[in-house]
Amino acid sequence: MSVSRTRRCLLKSTTIASMACGLGIPMVQAAAAEAGRFTAVLSRPNQALEPGEHVLEEIGGRRTLLYLPPSYNPEIEHPFLVMFHGARGDGDSTLQSARASADEHGVILLCPSTQAGTWDGIRGSFARDFNVINTLLQRAFDSCAIDSRHIAIGGFSDGASYGVSLGLINGDLFTHVIAHSPGFIISDNWHGKPGVYVSHGRQDTVLPFDRCGAAIVKRLQSKGYTPRFDVFEGGHTASPEIRSAALAWFTRPA
Image 1 (cartoon, rainbow, N blue to C red):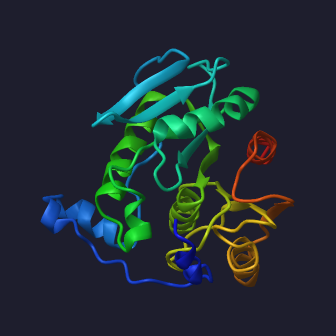
Image 2: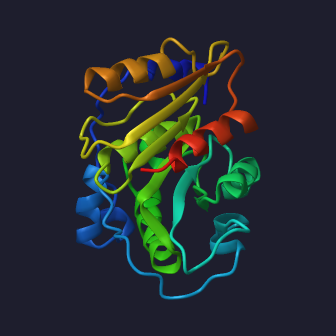
């Protein structure tokens, strides 16, 4: 993300314009896309997947991965997290960064890849990425034993802005939101009251601390949320320690 984009870091509402008709997406999905509202629903798993990586989609070498930690047992419900990469990242880079903490805390990971430089909502509208993720979420929900008390969405950088936005819009689906070094929140069309975790470095020069992470937390507090805010000395990053702290917070008993 360019430094100039940090001018948008103060929380704001943006008009969510649907591109679904031009992409040939069914109208029922288009209506959901306009509001950023997922239609995926948690269900009983219809298969017994083995621990490890499962490729749900691959286009041009960019993969969406479903990762089940070594401790995964289809007879037991597990915490679930969909995690979005930052600008120019992909699902593989997300898994590489998040695998150790997921293994430590027994968390199922869904790591999507956008086919553009960053996520559609960051570019101005929930469109193709949103609809693909909605489908992938349903596939994951149908395939894994997931604990309904621990369903999270989040990301890093651009992915954190996207994840926290969708998490708040769909707070009646997601119980937790995890945002590592976010820039802004796209919409104020919030539902439910998920727990929110935010981490941000004081020396972040990409998405400055005061105008981004701290502003997001202040906005959440003004709306009655009580986010956990992990502030660290450092730049635009999410260290293994921070990622582990976020998942420890997420997986604590409900």
